[in-house]
Length: 181
Image (cartoon, rainbow, N blue to C red; front, top):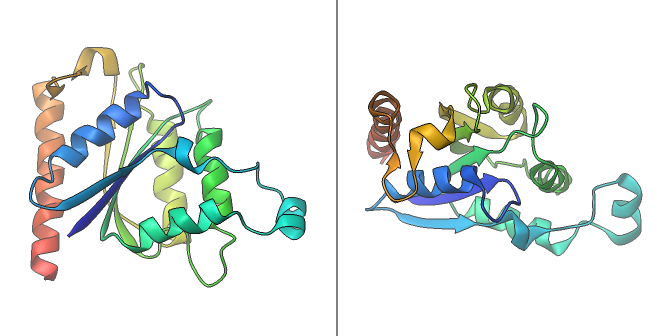
């Protein structure tokens, strides 16, 4: 199984990147890769830019990374209750690639975290409802509230109850993939 991970944030110190890296580390036996949205910075999507310059090569490159994987680990940053501008821009460009859906029918473990007690739950709900329309199969989701209190940089999720929930979801995903093989 090939696992592709990324945080829906352009912040160099993204808490969602820390969470998705922790999730990625749980797939020790699988081939994994992590992407940084900063490596895929493109002009802000507009139909006029698409008509004049076409779809940026970086959108095709990001899409190829999705195509090459079996499972996506995505942890979305919540900006004003929705996606970050960096993620939304990539999402918009990917949606314009002819003959492909954004997530190409890949399984997705969808996550979010925030410093507050809701753990990015607004953006998580938006994505859980939206991604299936763009070829995403959200197989599990996880919200980590109060990041500073529930996550340790070296140990990962430090709240035992949340760690147990997270671990069960990871194990279910692994088992589901083993059954498909």
